[in-house]
Amino acid sequence: MRSLDDFACGKLEALERARLRRSPVVTARDGIFVERGGRRLLSFSCNDYLNLSGHPAVIKAAITAAERYGVGAGASRLVTGNHPLYDELEDALARLKGTEAACVFGSGYLANIGIIPALMGDGDLIVLDELSHACIYAGAKLSGASVHRYRHCDVGHAEALLAEHRTAHARALIATDGVFSMDGDIAPLNALSQLGNRYDVWLLADDAHGLGVVGGGRGSTFVNGSARSPIDVPLQAGTLSKAVGAYGGYLCASQAVIDLMRTRARTFIYSTGLPPAIVAAAIAALDLIERDPAYAGEPLRKARLFTRALNLPEAQSAIVPVIVGDAGAALAASDILRDNGFLVIAIRPPTVPTGTARLRFAFTALHEDGDIARLAEIVRQQILRR
Ligand SMILES: Cc1ncc(COP(=O)(O)O)c(C=O)c1O
Figure 1 (cartoon, protein in one colour):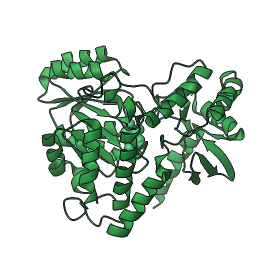
Figure 2 (cartoon, rainbow, N blue to C red; figure 1 turned 135 degrees about the vertical axis):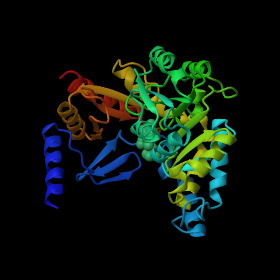
Figure 3 (cartoon, rainbow, N blue to C red; figure 1 turned 90 degrees about the vertical axis):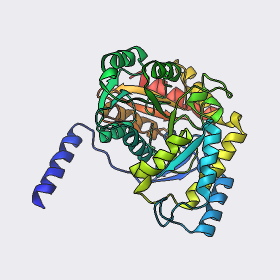
């Protein structure tokens, strides 16, 4: 239709002018390297922090499951898609996170847009960190609750919002990333948990980038707590697509909350179950994470080599941002690194706030210390000095 295409072309032209147009580039991953645009590049843009997506035991588990159960799940989990591997995966997640139960969703994004509207509705209150991931925003919007944002990691501001609004609403939720996806810092979960208890507000932390990486691999609730008494976060969401190297999302919580998800979360009910091979891969990867907390510490060690070399604030996770400002400058910086053999994707608005376009470096266990030193040197000489 003419008006439809005119609309799309107009939007695309405006994005192009602002250097904000995006399109997928064919990329073949090969361990920590990628083949892209005819070049072989060392990638610092994969969230496969433990390189488990290519681990022989993980691949073997996927192949065995596909052979045994077929490729697709065939139906939603409440129909016939709940193949036998799901119980094992949910038990493994609950054990690793120290919760009563867990529920697996189709992806991390689907988890949050299912969980939040299953708990919150019209007349309820959601207070969220302004840098929360897009799927937290989407879930909050879908729920119909009133949504207020607090300044990034500012517990005082969160408290001020609760003091002002809490009593006017039946139920309330604080939502935040555990490890922030574009900044790499960790939410003040202990303080948020205490705030939640004071105001009778439920706390949801999305640990997509924490699981497998911080807290001995158990995630951000274990960073300042101990293995025996992690920080009390009643709703622990996350993904199986990053350090776990597979796919899918999860919620770890009490048995009652998980039972509610299984009967009310729309993205659980009305979407086909994950392929058995993916569930088997996630089980194998979680087993590796649980058995080797020292290996899980490697991405953070590598990230800290980089931040020390550049005198940046010490990395708190595997993610390190170098903020360059406008979108064009971020693209140019990414090109410089590409010309030196590295893939570091420029992250631009609306993924990050206007004026904070950046290079986002993601470190993995298998990056070589020498390559990190070389990368840091190029960043120092050719990007930070410009
Ligand atoms: C904090 C956060 N939550 C959720 C997601 C979505 O997870 P998934 O890729 O499994 O949909 C991401 C990234 O993709 C993320 O960074």
